[in-house]
Image (cartoon, rainbow, N blue to C red):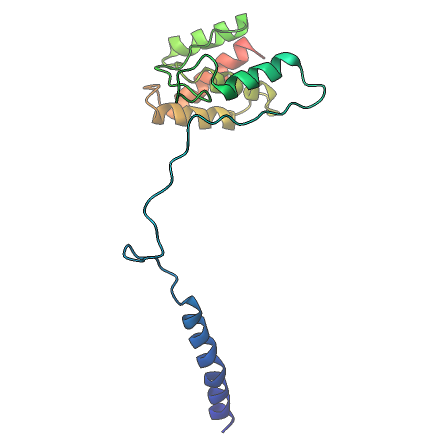
Length: 174
């Protein structure tokens, strides 16, 4: 008797709750034929200029640069000034003799450093900061070596590349 009473009470509570949950969704989807949905967007005028306010203490050149950018000075009408298309990434030049030595050792060892110089230099610094002192391969060197392999930047195995990164970093930086 108690089981039947519990089951009846459960049904009495769940049925209205589920029914309200389903009906509360109502018209939650949007269809293409819905008259409330507009498929057009009003165009934005290109010839309006937004006013620029400067804060007290701002340098004159910064305020002037911002004003020139907002008014489109020096740019063709309708051209965005916030970004420009580039055809290739700029090449970075090594900053220190250590970096030159490190990158050359990696290249000679079979790693293409094009486009990943910053990551490799950062890895070298992580190798030198490693508290295990070269007792085992640095985890960052292993991770970067795996990425270099996945990016076809080397024909070495991940472990061989990690050893090369580790030893070259220790010779050049540590």
